[in-house]
Length: 246
Image (cartoon, rainbow, N blue to C red; front, side, top):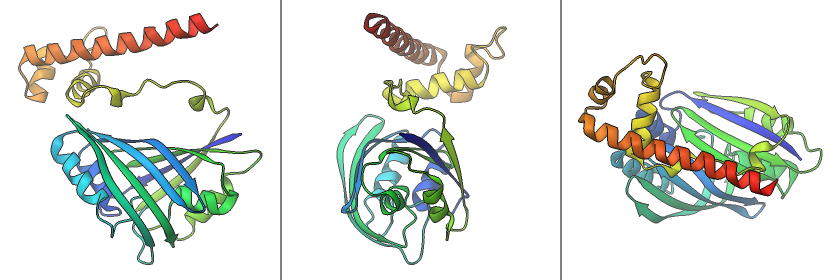
C-alpha cells in the first residue's frame, strides 16, 4: 500500500466552500467516511466552528449547483448529487453527501477512481485555505499519474502539491482529533498556545488571552481546564491502551 497526500491551497474567490473556511479560520471540516467507486461518491463530513460559519457551510453544501468534491470551480463541471444535514449539534454539523457523474470536475476521488479503479481509501480535511486529501492506494499504484491529471486544467487560484508518505502510519493508529473538543474549548486552547500562554516563561498571561478572545478570565480558565482535561485523558487513555495491547 502507498499513501499520498494531495494538498490544495486556495486564493479567495477560487472556490465557494473554501471561501467560507478562509473567512472563518476557526472552522474545521473532516471527512468521517468516504466511499468512492465508478458509480459515485458517498461521504459524511463533520464541520466544527462558530454557528454563522456552520450556517454558511450548510448553505453551500446543500446547493446542488456547487461541486463540493472539486478542488475548485470549473465552468464545464457537471455533477449530480444530494446532500443532507444528518445531525446538528452545538458548534458542529454532520452532512451526508452523495454525488455521481463528474465530467470535467477536479475531484481527487473521481480522478483516483478513474485512474486506478476501485479500492482506494480516502481521508479529507479542510481548514483555512487548505484542503488536504490523504489517499491510500493498493499495490504498487503510483499517485503521480493522479496528480498529473489533477494538475491538467486546475482552476485558477488553486495550487496543488503532492507528497508520498514513507509508511501509512496515520491509517494504523486511532487519531486524537481536535474536532472531538467543543468549539469554544478548542478556540480557547488554540489561542492560549498561539499567544504563548504555555511557554516557559509565559509570553502571555491568562488575562492577555482573555482580552484577545473578549472573554472573562473565569470563562477562559474554565474552558482551558476542560480542554486540558480532554487532552490529558485522550493521551493517557491511548497510551494505556497501547501498553495493554503490547
